[in-house]
Each structure stands twice: as structure tokens, then as C-alpha cells.
Length: 463
Image (cartoon, rainbow, N blue to C red; front, side):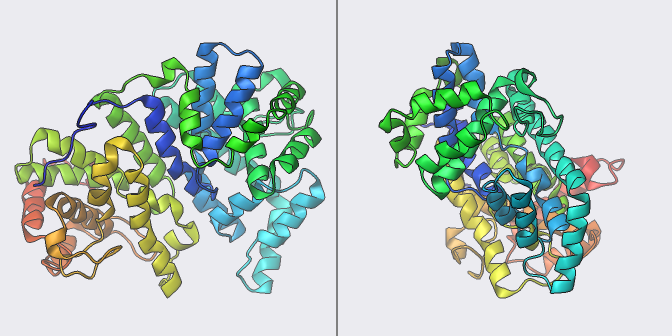
């Protein structure tokens, strides 16, 4: 097996802030936002924090609140598709530009509910939304906020960060969600993050002047007037707004990181972060719950059987946990479709593998894992995707992940079928040896399954 390059071959460490900045690419995708949205929000929010005189410790918590504000967003994607019969990414992206008036919200619902359905379905569903929209909105936001806060805690951030993420959608006048908090009862980090988010959405969609006008119009309703005053002062410096369209905005935001945010992370913390992001990935669809964790589990079992070293197994498990990160960029209308995919939908599904490569290649410790993880749909006969690699170009580490991924995909429930029992799964896999599945990896999987304790009667309990 090819050696898996250590974390950083020369310096053997990575800063927490650098890793979190890089991983926000995946969060932008699941929200349907353009690249570097979270990073630009961090630029905006940190300037506000500095302007109002936050301490070094407070700026540290604000920094990670801004970067992690969307960690819970994958958890309501499937439900949005179900409720609104809409593409979750398009729906989320468009909703962020809706005005504050009731008429604006109603027009948005009418335009975006069931867009590609027949008129009867659209009318029926639109009436349902207009009737029950408030309770649906509460459910969606509560799911996202609670999940985001939990993920922040799993990433070992303190309650200031977790609560900042949880209360992102609260409004200054008490009209927000999920708890209708008002004024000073809303965590300061949440107040800053929401303002930064709206400014970035509108400046990207229109221009900075329009974004600033939107902030001023919502002052006292959505936003803390003190913070709006601060952003108006900051905006007098043209370099601030120019940076939002800069090609090196990530470097600028890295430079803003408080010293405490630049701590070095060890193997244990890196595994914690990867595991948490695996949960974000699997929350995208009810049919992928626990998938990344199980693929990592079976990947490790296969690797043990094949004599892979402990150090290499660490990186192999990390690659397995992140192999589907690209699915955050695929609509749930496709991921959860119960019927056969058309050609365009199938192309979208295939893109997730390239998305995985693109995302991981931007993260310093994972650059050498990008091809390993992103090639898990390549086939030994050269018919796989995204690059139709030949057998000679598919490394053993990828073959192991592929075997584990196929095994879990077949044994798990899918939108179009139920779960397949293990014996039948192995029969199906045996028919694809030397095409999709490496025979040695398959034999290693069978040996590993035979060694699982008899009392572990289900795959989930085994994991």
C-alpha cells in the first residue's frame, strides 16, 4: 500500500484556525452559498468585534462562531425538499435574499414551492405552506440550530461558540427563532454573525452599498442598532469592502485569527474534527445516517486484515470518514429520489466525487487524501467516475475504501429499496470482482466479518 503522507511532512502540525477555515468550503456548499461565504462572514464579523472592543478571548469565540455558523445546515436539507418540494440548496440560497415584509415571504413561498411540479401539486403544497408555514419554519430552524450547536461542542468549542451558533436566527426585536429571544438576551456572537451573514449575502448578490442599506433598514428589527452603527463606521474604510471581493480573502481572515485560535492540533483532536464533519456529511440525507462512520469502521477492518500499519490506518479512516463530503454539494431532490435518476441527475451525483477531491485538496493535512477519498467510485475496469481511472491508477487505499463503501451502501436502506442482508450483499459483491471491487479487499472484508463477535447481530451495533 502506498504510504499515507503524515499530517505536514516538514513541520508535522496544523493550526486549528487553518483547518476550520478550509472546511468551511463544505458548509458553503450545503447552504447553496458561493465559495468562501463563511470566510467573508468571518472577515465582516471580526471587524465588528474589534470595533466594539471585544477582548482577545471574546474574539476567539466570535471567530469560530462565524466559521461554524452553518454546521447544522445539512440536518434540515432533506426536510426542506419534503416540505417545499424544492431543491434544498436553491431554496436556502434564495431565501436569504428575501425581504422582511410578509408580502416578500409570501411571494417567495409561491415562487419557490414545487417549482418543477404540476400546477395542482404546486397549488396544494403552497396552500399547505401558507397555512402551516410558521410551524414548519420553527421546525427547520430548531433542527439546524440545535444540531449546529451540538457539532460545535463535539468540535470541543465552548458554550459561547455553541450558543452563538444556536441563536444565529434570533432577531433583535424578538421575532426570530428558535426561542424568540430579544435584544441583550441574544448572545452577542449570534447578533454579529447574523448581521455579517446578511451583509455578505447581499453584497455578493448585489453590491456592498446595497448590503449596507439592507443592514440599516433592518436595524432595530433584525439587528442590534449598536452593531449596525459599528458596520457603518467600518464601511468608511474602502479597503474593508474591497477585501470581500479579493482573491486572497482566506489569507486576510487567517491573519485576523486571535493567537488562541492558532493552537496546534494533535492526532486525537484531528480525529475528533474529522468524525464531527463525518456527522455533518451523513446528516444531509436520512438514508446516509451513520454511513461515513460505518465505512470508516469497515475500512479499518479490511486494512487490518491486509496488514496495513497503524499509522497508515489512521489516515485511511480519516479519508473514509470524509469520502462523501462532496455530497454536501448535491441536492436532496436527487440524493433522496425514490425513482430512477435521469441523465442530468446522475451527472450531478457523479460530481460529488470530484467535489470531495476539490474540498480535501484545499486542506493542508488532507491534500494527499483527496485522490484516495475522491476516487472511491472509480472502477478497476476503467468505467468509474469522476476520472475513469485505470486499475493501475487506483491505489490500494482507495480500493479498500471502495470495498467498504459498496458493502455499506448495499446493506443500508436506500430511497428506492430496503436494506439487503449481509449474505446476499456478499453474493452481489462477488459478481463485481475485478470490475468495481478488488478481490483481495473483498476476501479481507469477508475474513473481517467472520471475526465479528456473534452477539453483534446488526452492522450498526458492530460499529
